[in-house]
Every structure is written in C-alpha cells, then in structure tokens.
Image 1 (cartoon, rainbow, N blue to C red):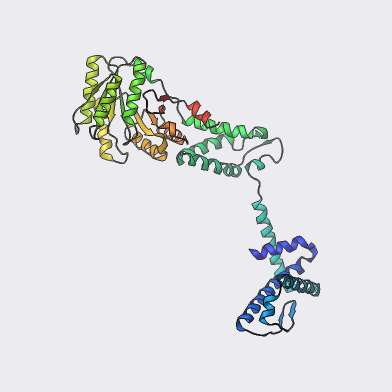
Image 2: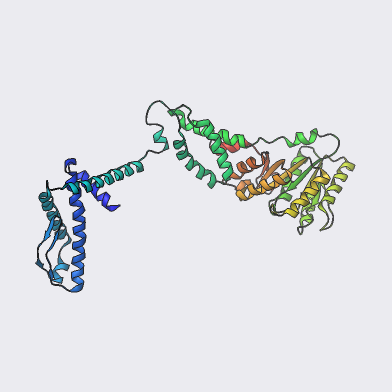
Length: 416
C-alpha cells in the first residue's frame, strides 16, 4: 500500500484544511512522475532528440531539446529539485479549484487514509503485560488478553516436549484460575506462575513408596512386570531396582522373559551375578509367560519377596506383541506393571505410554536417561496420559543411579 503511506506523509506535513487539495495533487503527481520517467527512458531507447509537449492534470511540460549525453549527466539532485519546484507550483495553481466530483473521489481517499492510520494503530497494540498495567490498581484478564499471553507459553511448552493435549489441559486449568478474576496488578506475575504451577502439579502424581507396597503384601511374592519398546533401558532399569530393593532388605528373583532379543538372557544373567540374585530363564524362542510363571514358582518355593520380570521390547503399534503381553499378565497377575521409556524421546514416549496404558494398564512409570533430558516435558506428558505416578528417574549407568521421582523438585526446576 505505498500510495496510502505517501498520503500519510503529506498529512503530517500540511494543515488539515488543505487535505482535499493535497490528496488530489499527490495523486496526480505520482501519475505524472511515473509518466515522465516512462517517457524519459522510452525516449532514450528510441534515440529521440525531443520530448513533445504533454499536458497532465496540474502539469505542463515544455518542449525541450536534450541529448542522450545530457540526460545521463543530469545530477539526481537537480532532477529532484525540478520535480519539487513543479510540485510546489502546481499546488499553488490548484488552490481552490477542486470540483465536487474530485471532492467525492477524495472523500473516498480520506476513508482509505483513516483506515490505514487505524491499521497502524492496531500494529501498536500494547503487549500482554502493558495491557494489564495501564489503569487502576487491579485488573481482570479477558479471553482475548489471556489468549495473547498463552500463545507464547504454548510455544514454550511444545518446544520442551510437552504434548499438545497436555498443553490444552494446562490452558483449560489456567483459564479457570485467571479469566475474569480481579487480580492486583503487582501480583499478576505471581498469579500466572502459581496457576501454571498448580496445573502441572495436578497433572503429576506423587509416587507411592514401593518398599512399603511390597512389604505390605502378605503371603505370595510381589510380582513386578516391566515393558516398553526396544532400547528403552528395561534390563538396566530392572537391575537398578533390584539393587534398590536389596538395599532395603527385600530379596528378589529375576525372570528373563525377553526370549526374542539376542543376548538378552545373558545380559540379565550377568547383572544377576553382579547383584547376587537368581535369574530364571529358558531357551530363546520360549514362551515368556512360561518363564515368568517359573520365576513366581521359584520365589514361592524359596520365600523370596519380589519377582521382577523382564520382557521383550515391543512397539506400541504391533497388536500381536501387545496380545502376547496380555497373555503374560493373564497368567502371572502382576501386582505392579511398570512402563519404561527414555525421557529424551518426547512425544514418542508419550504416545507409547498412552497406547500401552489403553491396552493393558500402566500402574507406574520409570524414565531412563533423565540425566541428559534438558527439556523435562516428557515427564509431564506421561503423567497426564497415564494418570499414574512416575516412580524413578534413571540418571546414569551405575546400579545406584536410580533417583526417586519428586514432582515438587520437577516444578522447582521449572522455576515456578
């Protein structure tokens, strides 16, 4: 819209009473200048020596003889001054000579100018915090202002691996807390932070004490089943939890239920030797439900309190592998079903958790590689889709590198 911007410049330089006159002159000037330049260069290309006299609205260009050399050597400043002089001369000639027809046309132009000015005012709208601190001692956030603010927050959450449906939930919770509520302007920052903190706190569930849970079961051993996709760190996590249980005087037996992946049985057996616990296994290709059943039977016979069952990694999209897991659950009836995922995989881990949870239920989760997760959104997302607690975070490769999950610590790390 260059024409409107030029009109606006004129309005700023002349009195308002001359607006009709100036708008008309400016319109004609642009037209004339364009035609002049067009004629100038067309004459050069055709090698013409003369410029014929032409009449325009408000301009009369006299006949002149100019060589191509002279045209090339004409300084830009001289040309500019000539145009300015002609413009001033035309303004004087056009004074008080505006017809009713031109006035009607200019009225439309003025509407365009006002529209343009209004558009520019829109561009200068105050931001969220400027809006809420303009007047008075208190404020209430309307829907429009809240939406403006939340766009930035939404982008931040999405960039940090918080799933979209979780962002929507956070938004819903914050709207209930903040919309149309009178808030002291000095407290608006704290109110927004507190609302976000409250929303995340409601999503995350404080973990239960697994030691008390195991010890409180009487009679049969406490059975823990682990599952997740390939490479999520299930076997290492089982070994870490075994170490943790032993530290708390709870004897364990391990079941090598991953009868599919090469070297998986040997890997678990090596951990068992280091930890000093029994590993129950069969040949590769054996029914994992049968291996789990044997481990439970062994625990009962030897008075062992806890059975930890490893399983083959399975994609959450493979229905046949999901049915296999359902069979294991049906045969051994675990007391706790733990989903293991990498914290750094973001939305993939959230999707896995959602599918596994819908298929056979998740009782708790353990997130591995939390020590290299710089975003933290996966924890919030998995907590939301499963509605179950995260028990531990894997923070290294040593057996001791299993940290209890604390939602208060996570929220504090977010700076809330």
